[in-house]
Amino acid sequence: MTETMKAKYDLIVVGAGHAGLEAAFAAAHMGKQVLLLTLSLDHIALLPCNPSIGGPAKGHLVREIDALGGVMGEAADATDIQMRLLNTQKGPAVQALRAQVDKPRYGAYMRQRLQEEANITLLERVVEGLIIEAGAVQGVVDEYETAWQAPRVIVCTGTYLRGQIIIGDLIKNAGPGGQVSPQGLSRSIAEDAGLATMRFKTGTPPRVDGRTLDRELMAVQPEDAPDRRFSHWSEAANGLEKRPCYLTYTSADTHAIIRDNWHRSPMQTGLVTGAPPRYCPSIEDKIHRFSDKSRHQLFIEPEGLDTTLYYMQGFATSLPFDVQEQMVHSVPGLAHATLVRAGYAIEYDLIEPTQLYPTLECQSVKGLYFAGQMNGTSGYEEAAAQGLMAGINAVLSLEGKAPFVLRRHEAYIGVLIDDLITKGTREPYRMLTSRCEYRLLLRQDNAHLRLTPYGRRLGLIDDDKWALFQADCDQIAAEKDRLKGVDVSPADADLAVLLTDRGSTPLKQKITALALLKRPEIGYRDLLALGYGDGCLPARIWREVETAIKYEGYIAKQEDQVARLEKLENKQLPADFDYSRVTGLRKEACEKLSQIRPLTVGQASRISGVNPADITVLLVGLKKAACLQGGNHDR
Image (cartoon, rainbow, N blue to C red; front, side, top):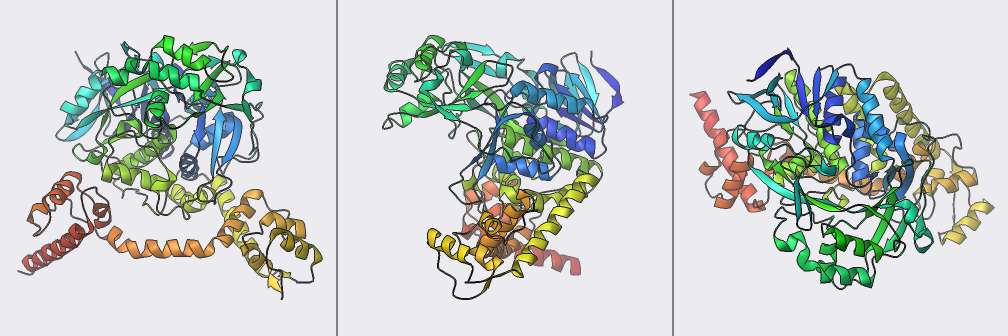
């Protein structure tokens, strides 16, 4: 018999992974009482796959989460055992920070933060159903048939719903790491909430014992960015010992072993039916799809300081265990490695994300939100970003306030959510810099400048952080002004030598230090060496000044492009608009628009199956509908 609890919360978050934590912290910091339900208190903030945070596009998301008041960046900074800056040979738009983190310490850090948050009640429960009445969510039911009441529920269940782990012909009902795999919640989402669901597949590589590695046969990958941080608010290094990663490659023997056992792959035997990830394929899939490549690179990564486990990045597999052992031993540097934990594939349920509003609220059930891999994404960072936005919007909805939606030109988070709800996905979605059309505006280094004012207005940025942000803004503006007033003379002998060495045109007349910095061959470090820079400025300040000055023209062009497209983005579509009454609108476009229910013409233009001609027809239809409404109103 179901018992209704007396305690009623403002908001329930289902799942304490990366999405659930950000949702819970955001709601709690905005003053709401949050019930956070997790499958296991021992697996909070679990990193079930790679032991890292960040990377291309993902690092941008972490910086944006931090700028809005989220916690992932601070957790990564507190537990990193290696920090690297990627894509340094490319422009600032695609450079990205990546932290190798200590897995156990990362989870412990998040548990400590939860214990310090008075507005969050954390319980170990398996949620088996939703309580929905009159088209609105009222709470959830756990495995003990206890009903927990709240007017807002955020489902952040990751890859656990009806999860199945597959290794060769071995199948077991389990979530990542062999945890509980809830069965009832999927049924409730489909039957009680009436949502369309899908099934995806992802996987993880074997773990090996670091004491059995032949490290001298692999290339060392040391830390190269010890002064970099994900969080704008992290002041100092965490003091943890730093550990290198190792680079190695598959061999001809590896490929032969996989080809000889291809018929034993669960993908071939039909045991795996879910859609696999395109951008993080299994090693057997790589060798099958890219048969012309003689080798594939692998990174052997430490999982922590107090464990001997190493993660084989790039070697995900679900082949039988005996085959995995042969594969591992065929890799240079791993001939004597002990395979501690087998790699596996995992299948799980998720929803069609096109059923959500930009707030991540379900269109058909008021107060029900979804975030993370439940919406079709892959990766910790994508999940955390969605959780933060769902938590914020659930609170704003409770308070009767306008929703908080980031647009594509404002944040990678905006690109991520817009892609999901507008285009949907038929495979695990991974954030890529190539998905963002305004990359130069949305750099990782300026995330706080773009988004911290939003975080402050939402109540997620405290006074100390706000004071630091304002001081940074003042320093950036002051340094730009100072450089405009610093004269650089052609008579500067040191500068003349530098320009010659760099292949830069010699000065013929006096210019400002700002003009000198605009030259592609000259950086702010050069200004410091020549005495034109300000040696007292923190590196984060002069780096931002340097980028803003060097790319000023390109940034202005992208801002103009955004302004031109704003008309479509600002043109609202009525929630009850009848697309079937628009004369000349193609059937496919009508079906897609009716299904997804875009909120703006700009969003409608990005729906797969809706072309520019359809948008032109739609604009005419909107104008006619407005005229008719105006006429009816006049009468």
